[in-house]
Image 1 (cartoon, rainbow, N blue to C red):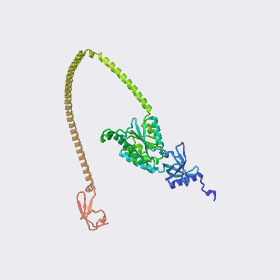
Image 2: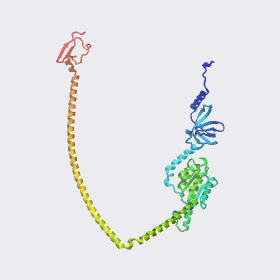
Image 3: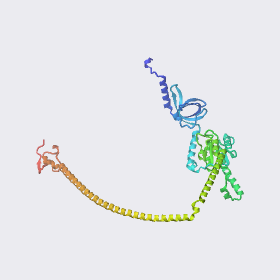
Image 4: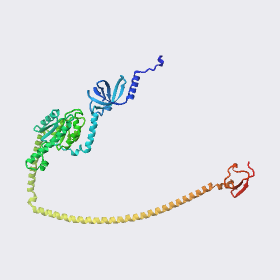
Length: 468
């Protein structure tokens, strides 16, 4: 074959055609696999490999698409992503371009999370109005978490460092797995019930009846910390269960949620009275530094003593001034002066009342005169307006009558012009047969027929003797 008949393609054209065929043939699809060789470029684009036990494929996710992803991809992470097959033309490498990505198994959990969140929010479990304030200085803090996790160690370390003589009561629970949610909810309810029973028992021993004891109890636990250390969404799922949310909501003791999940919130975070991003922060929120409190108390004592001293000196000075004042030396003269002042005020008040009443009367008279003038002027203007309207109405009726007469005359002229008999005055005639039908053409008559011809000034009867 000669070179002139060959269709020669460049490598770029071949790769471009291959890319277009690949993209148009398959479109977008969901794919699941494990991330590896994850590279986050300075431009914000993500480049990685998605693999399973039998194959691997190069992938890219551009910055505009990954901006809303709530987690950071890393090697070994199992993900599901919505992607379209494509081809990188520069190297001819087949790849997937991702537009959405989520951790494998998270999609279904996220849907459950959103449904439960909307339900509890509608019931008012997240309302700020029902959230309880944290105690200023709790004496005993209950902690609901795993006894072997890092969370309890962090909480104990922070609490004992900030306030060494604080009591900590641990309610050990399972924080992960199918029984975790029920375990956490039961622990919260137990600590609340323990408070009521313990306080009621003490008050009953003191001779107070059961009803009064239950209403007067003083909690032995002032604050609850409920949480755990970090983990995946599956690990933290117990704190997204409805049973835990309702237990926190029903708690009479203020609750700090301490689930280490800084990117997102759990359902427990929304229901709790205060949310802390980590167990350590929860402990810091629960109690102030003992040294800070002692410094504040010392400062308050100094300020109170200084204030009392200033008040004492001020009262002493005022007492000395009062003891040497003119009131105590000449009380009768002072009473006489006040009596004269009162009499003077009474006289001035009477004069002012007279002047005021006279001024009011004068204003009323002026108002009456103005009102009469306004009414008279208004009536005259109304009469004038009525006269003007009458004249305008009469003129308008005359104009309409004249227009009507002109219209009638115009119609009469048109009728006269349209009258077929009026044409006869201009030399035309109208011929009919005896039966009244109009003769329009020679075909309408035969020799011997009788015709009646109407002229402008009369009629002529004739017989047809000849027809051409």
